[in-house]
Length: 320
Image (cartoon, rainbow, N blue to C red; front, side, top):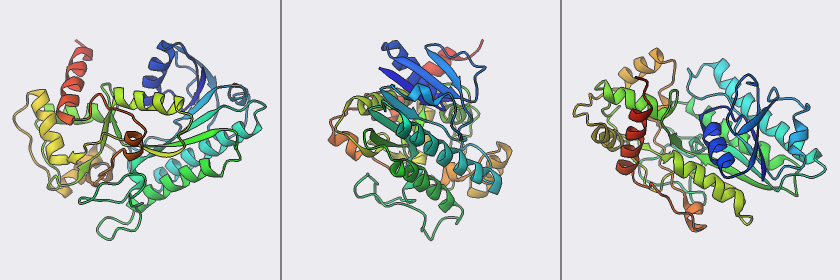
């Protein structure tokens, strides 16, 4: 297969490129970062918003996996939130335009989305059928609703694209746990090693996560099952409260102490890290109902086992 991956130079794109190229697929990354040499892929330029020569790569391709979008690991200022919105909606819109104009459109378009689309929830798990879309919760900061609005409009850009001959799937992705600098797991593991891997704001909020190998396998599964369309939750079937999540990570890392943090302490830490507490405090209790119903099986559905693997791999890859 020829697979085109807009926004493919981030951590998830590199994971997918490695797996897909090793499987013998022709991978083309469409990116602003044309200076990068990505093993297993060709890289062509775009700006994420406008038509250009890159569109020729989509014409005749077998699949498109659009991952483009500004990182959410930043301060949620008005400028950054607007850029998160624009980078996601604009890129999905122009990818849809490229597919619509292709003489031979791809058979499938996988569009990145986010599990953040669901409501803050402690007491119920959100699947694709019965899950509650967020944005109107009374007990959370009002600005969290903007993240839900980003997700809604991101998915709407794909749904509105005039691409009747291309199967469309929205990847409602939870936090992907993968070794490597800059990722969510790297930050949590560093916090744990420094003795800061305790509960935050009580630790009742749920962590929805997926092991990197299961993320890649789920994407491959959705690429090849022609009967599957619409939104799919990419998340472990066993989310757990943050307190238990961090206890599992401490156990895997052999760290006995994990100091707790209050919500205001988390705010200070997020400010220092140039991030936002929504990433820690929103209770994302998301389960992969449609994936399981379709017959997908997780290699690492349980956090203690996944954490041991991730810690071992992180230690192996640490610079000496």
